[in-house]
Image (spheres, rainbow, N blue to C red):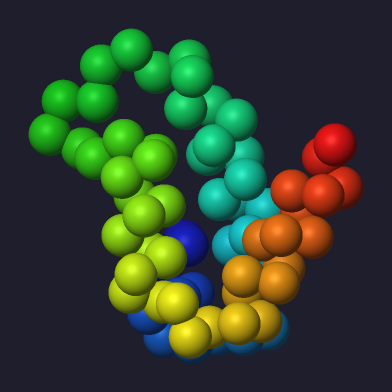
Length: 69
């Protein structure tokens, strides 16, 4: 879902994608074997590069992280 929202710039769903991304980060430590998939850290880095100009999304993601702590 995160990729679809960001790739298609569906800004009305940025809040949902940001929550999903945060949840993925939380679950990351429970995964021992990624196989052919990139780790959460690698995925986060790749979307940071690809979607760095989507300021609204990154604002939502930062807000989700701040509410967590």
